[in-house]
Length: 114
Image: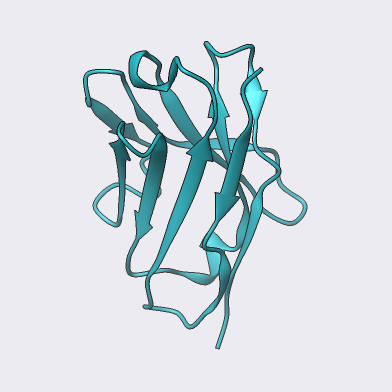
């Protein structure tokens, strides 16, 4: 059974940075894709970034050039480095493993406000 645990959220001023982490249990992490999603207040959950098992990445247009997804297979952890944060980035951020029994993490809150 896979479990995903996010951390690193918090309150940050516009223009600031945060790094989110998603730690996975289980032995299949190395060979699977990982995603970051977010859900802002009153909004639908949206895909933010994807990283494949080979390390290829893709991003939503709204975060391209500001966010970076990466992974450390030895630590079974995927990261989301978020720079130049905007108030519109305020959301609960979730990691998701679509090929590991469609497993979601519990989410971590990010608030961008002055």
